[in-house]
Each structure stands twice: as C-alpha cells, then as structure tokens.
Picture (spheres, rainbow, N blue to C red):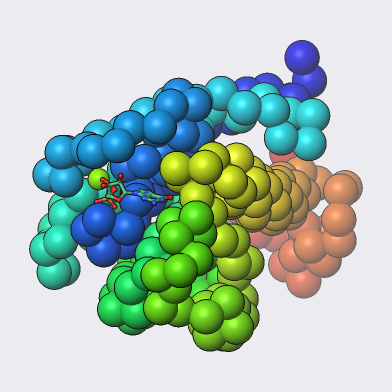
Length: 216
Ligand SMILES: Nc1nc2c(ncn2[C@@H]2O[C@H](COP(=O)(O)OP(=O)(O)O)[C@@H](O)[C@H]2O)c(=O)[nH]1
Ligand SMILES: [Mg+2]
C-alpha cells in the first residue's frame, strides 16, 4: 500500500438544534437503520469505514446533543473536528437561524473561513410542513461557501451524499496541508544540506570562509 493510499482517519462533528434529526441521520449513515426516537441527551461517537475516490477512510462521527451555549466541551470538539455537518429541519426556521452562531464559533475556533462544512436541511419528507424554502437555505449555504443538501433520515434520502461530500472536502484539505508541509520540509532540508540550493553557499561566500560554521 503506498503512502497516499493508507487508510486515514477523519473526524466529523454533527451539529444543530435539538430535534432536527442529527441522531437519525447518523444512525442511517453508520448503521443503515431508521430509529424513530432517540434519547435527545445522548451524545456519542461512531466509526465507519468508507471508500471515497478510491481511498479507504475511517470516519469518526460525533453526534452532538447539547443545547448549551458556548462550553469548554464544545470548544474541544470544534477544535478536533475536521469537518462539520450543520443540520437544521426544513420545518423550522429557527433551527436554520441557530446554525449561524454555530458556524461563527467553528470559523473562529478553527481560524479558517473555509473549514469543511455541509449544510443539511433534514426532514425533506415533510414537504407539507416546510417552513424554510430551498432558495433561502441555499443562499445561506452560498454565503458560507458550503454545499447544501436536503435530506430525509426517515426516507434515507441524500444521507450518504451529504456525509461523502464532507469527507471529500476533508480529504482535499488534508492533502493540501500535507503538500504544504512536505514543501516546507524539503525547503528546510535544502537549507541544511550544502550544495543543494544556493543559500549555504551564499553564506559561505559572505563569511569569506572564516566563520566557525558547521557546514558539513
Ligand atoms: N419525518 C421525519 N422525521 C424525522 C427525520 N429525522 C428525524 N426525525 C424525527 O425527529 C425527531 C428528532 O430526531 P433526532 O435524530 O433524535 O434529533 P436530534 O435531537 O437532532 O438528534 C425524532 O422524533 C425523529 O423521529 C426525518 O428525516 N423525517
Ligand atoms: Mg440526538
């Protein structure tokens, strides 16, 4: 298995107001089951292995439960999360409004306005109770540079698609970060090795060859 094909582990956090369907979505994605009612206070993490673009990934998915405001716990999982599924219910406008604060906190804590995000409007099977238009939700997602999916955990609609999209964003970000690190490493290596790059030679020349330099 070559270096790039090794299995990688990614941390996903599912966030949103209570009752929007976070646990049902997670259960459908991880276990392919519909569970009518979940204990709303249970916060748990689940692991699932999937293949995305020919590479194996292990996803560690945290299904959050807190309705609390900013807490140390929340800060912790926002720090360790690499991608966030922001869930609201299409039957509740306030559940969409509540995502603004969560998104602000994520961006602030990650210090990255382009952190991998997917906006999910769940309960799309309840079209007759719709309180958030597609275009309104889409506008919000556009302003956050994030894709928007309408899902139904009940009908298992668009569930895999939204998690996989998030996973692809995380992989892209991970690869870009690794490339930058590799380049920085190469750059550092060049600076420490004589004859590989001009910097050392230039230093020798500037020193006139008299310094106690440790050029090997
Ligand atoms: N009709 C419908 N109900 C859903 C859907 N997803 C969740 N629910 C219901 O919404 C309620 C809250 O779901 P839950 O996953 O516990 O929400 P959480 O608090 O965000 O984790 C439960 O009664 C679910 O049966 C869905 O896609 N369609
Ligand atoms: Mg829940």
